[in-house]
Length: 243
Image 1 (cartoon, rainbow, N blue to C red):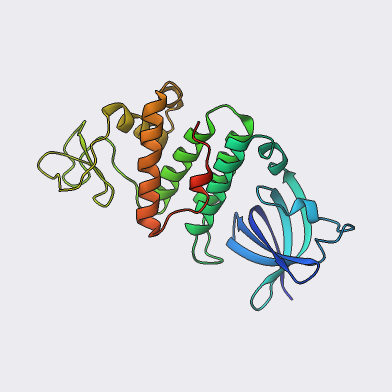
Image 2 (image 1 turned 30 degrees about the vertical axis):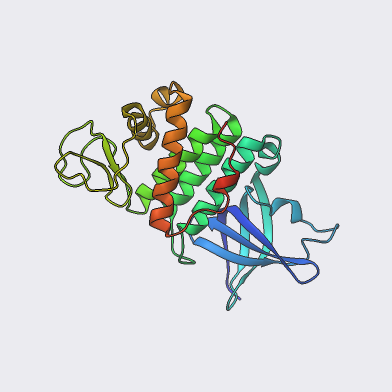
């Protein structure tokens, strides 16, 4: 059987039989891949601990008809142990993994930008340099942008008129001017839209200085955008500790 090697982040694991697991991962060159890791649930497994969610690995597999099979794993970063020590970081990271899997629906379709975003997001989460909730929201907004659903937080999403604008439409693509405003729009505070724009662009100086009430409102809008585009919410989001 043909073999291949790649770097990957482990997204999820499922039990298979008495000793095996099905591993879902996002790889750098092969996109989202599912593979069988044989015997990893036995205490004497050579690489069971390396195939846990959040792990960044160098992995070798051979191709199968429906599922590939893991033959070798080397750890590049065992991030799960660090995140498990902090509930806000753990829950935010879990939401990032779920979002990644949902946003890469086609197996073996390369998703290099999403892979690099996830690697960077998890490294930042582990480093503790920013609030976990802000890292998660930045990750969600940038993931939507990679998928082609980048929302607008300053210019009008419909006509491009310069903002700031008070109306915000989840299904309309973001901020709307008075002329394009539709019934049912939200009216977030102006600093909330500034915060969302800074998270999307990576302006951490503005994001880190934001007020907690604007962070909560921004998180609600980010979650609503993800739910709208994915057509159902992320199961892990309600568990995230928003402080």
